Length: 130
Image (cartoon, rainbow, N blue to C red; front, top):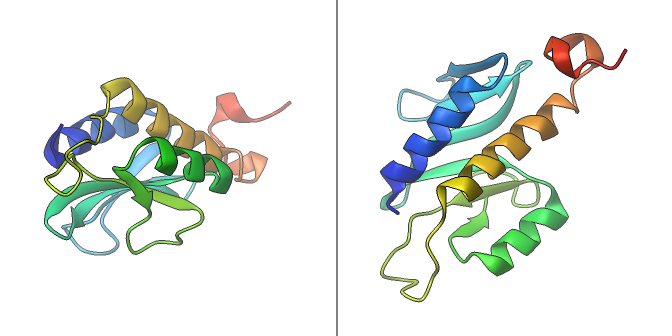
């Protein structure tokens, strides 16, 4: 799967999430997805390839990076709380490809991680605890 395909899947998922908004605070080449004014994902170009960067749990991101060489510490982000999904490339020829399902799950997890970090009043209605 190439970087453009990874970004297309990420966009599709991010755009259909409740109260997700697309903004360009870092310029037109950095497509940022927010919920409640907090970033959960970004589609941008890394060195030589389109990538997707996502909010992640530090422990889960470590496991993901061990299991998938194309999931790496967040490019230009906090390396502990963000990961970047890179396309399969010549530098990692034995690297397993990503499934669409894995990308969807990672986007949804990033979104939920941010949603539950928001004050209840700023969360999408269905995620507010009564």
